[in-house]
Image (cartoon, rainbow, N blue to C red; front, side, top):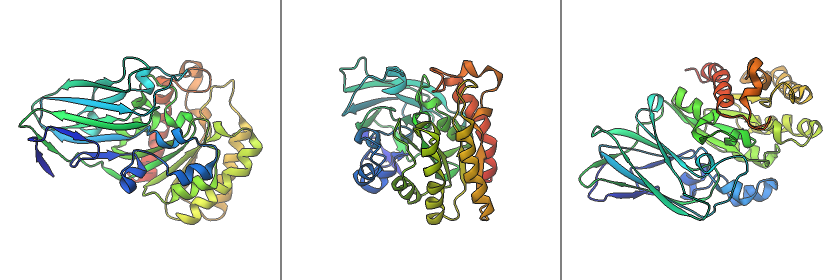
Length: 337
């Protein structure tokens, strides 16, 4: 679709712009990851966690030499582990998916500013623009204003669609990298040229069957799950991990599944939790499921693991980079890339 920018301002609702990574947007037109019924059934996920959209992206192509991104929030709260740059700002990329250049951030000046904007310049060539939604807040609207007389097109499709769906903890959600486009799943999306959905829920991923059923209803190429850190204890993980696999597999028998144990430094790694996940893998394969794989979270970081964390729980940018580097070849093989 080609639109001459006689109309110069487009919101996230307007074609040919496209929203990626927000499952409910395609269904309802709302910027939210979960419907209310799933939030209520899950019990551990707050309304804000279900409505904010980490991993969501707004994409289009244009020959406009400048453009302005404007964002309005419904919420704005301080995160003790992440700055405004990391948690409340949108990241803007220009160029092809696997070789895009980081153009900068669009974020509030302080915690009292719910609407803000920033302008960017680019070449006169028609190029892809990708805007990562802010991680932490509920977004009311994102709009893009182009130069008069320019053209706007639908974005270049990802090589791999449908998306890879990630379910897990605050780490899955992107905590605590300096810029949320450096979360391990976002890095993998750029490297593999694949769409993705981020269903990380800070403190709220407990392996509920309501989430397994919701996730199983999504269009996807592969399912990754890693909620080890949110399990309050090993017994809870044992009670929920295989049932989550079993429920998902019953509903989606042909989707590959990658299981991860917690990313952790050597000093806090929990072997008992890892063994629970390995038990799920063994049971699945004993039942004939060859579409399951496992990665041990203790293998991500190497001997310098203490350099890879903010608080000995959440990876920093180096930690996420190492996670993505370890996971990438496994995903490539599982996706047949």
